[in-house]
Image 1 (cartoon, rainbow, N blue to C red):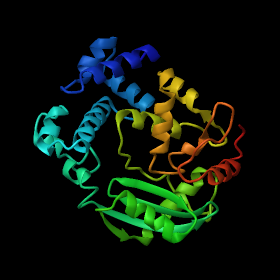
Image 2: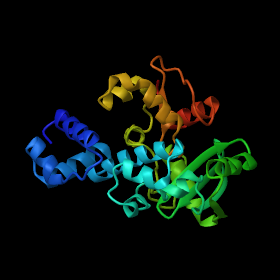
Image 3: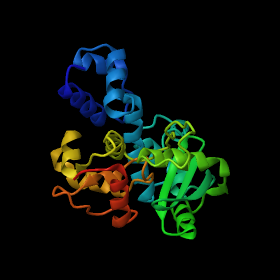
Image 4: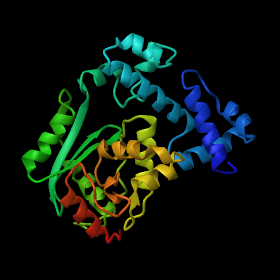
Length: 275
């Protein structure tokens, strides 16, 4: 991809045609690049493939329709899925449409909680990866946050997920067992295409640095989307690993944080961030 305009052109084309099948060859012809190059560079820039981005757009339409009370079948077809089986593919929402509409009914989520320098941490994980990481003042509050987010899911305590807690804390430079080698936790993020872009951009902010909401909006190519960026940060389900604490006001003020301003301050201090 020769430059940002090419990426924006591809993204706009996908957004305008997300209700039909779009091939890599079609995208390649659009910007005069090979399908392989389009796939590689699009994923490099956005963190998802063109197909995954299109699916996220469709999933967003599907979510909105379900929330507005549309039947599952109508919502699937109106969102652009060619068949009900494609709409029911768990890859679209991280859970099937019917389960999403029922607050996660039937979803299996393992969890583990532990103390940390930032209060109690609770992680929740599906087979796909980390879907919830919350910070709280007490163990009960931490566990309640998971139940509130997934009220109809089957929750099962899983002590083996303690490694996810440790891996998450290392994102901000805290290691309770520094000799243990751990890879960054795999995540199961569920959101709109725009939310996915914001969360991916958050993960690219280096430890020790911050961005303003308006800076992130400009980096995403939409300077007018400052409020939308702030909303995406506020709906982040995976604290620390998707480091929304690294986003501050244009003046450097801490502004809001889902898990508390004081905790945001402590996270930034642990990272040695300068604002």
